[in-house]
Length: 238
Image 1 (cartoon, helix red, strand yellow):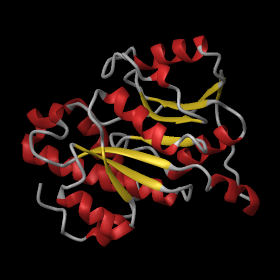
Image 2 (spheres, rainbow, N blue to C red):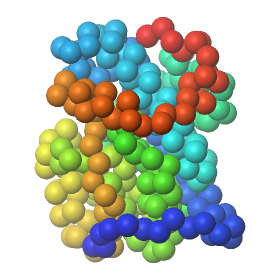
Image 3 (tube, rainbow, N blue to C red):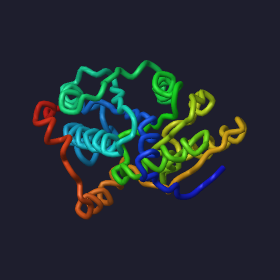
Image 4 (tube, rainbow, N blue to C red):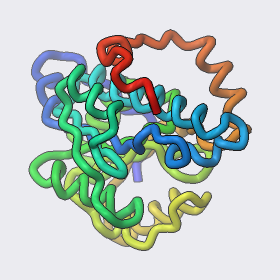
């Protein structure tokens, strides 16, 4: 395993190499009762859905701003929600239905579709501090020869995974949504003989206790809203 910072590639030739690395974004529809359910006690079902809509827009904006390869939005339960349609119209990203199965099956399906011919990154929508620079660092790690790259989460999971080629063993029968995810992923990567890199650990927004931190971060962060503005209000109703 390699850990630490990966320098972002800035010259024109290598920037072109970074465009070989597509990005998949997994997102739930901002439907009350479906999205951010662990935040419903604090925000109510409609409030949690509005937050999910914002997080989805922000995650998609960051993926596009990273200027890597094609960005794909994988939608659950499907791509018919007005928010997804508005984002597709505004950005031109492909919106695909997430397949049936647990989180691991859906993640592996995304890699099988987009990561067989080139390295690929996959993110969710729950990590506000994730930046385009993190995505470019992760892509650079894969292009430099690492088999996998992760950004661990403080809660024991991870907020980004990148692979040079699909690795089903990393996703099958994983104890998702538990503090054991990253540790078990490391164990499996080691068993598979993979060379992997971990970038800086970030926090995600899952529980009511995370909201105060998110509010403080939002006040201090400059958050461009190009995707949100371009999408207009077409996707605003949960």
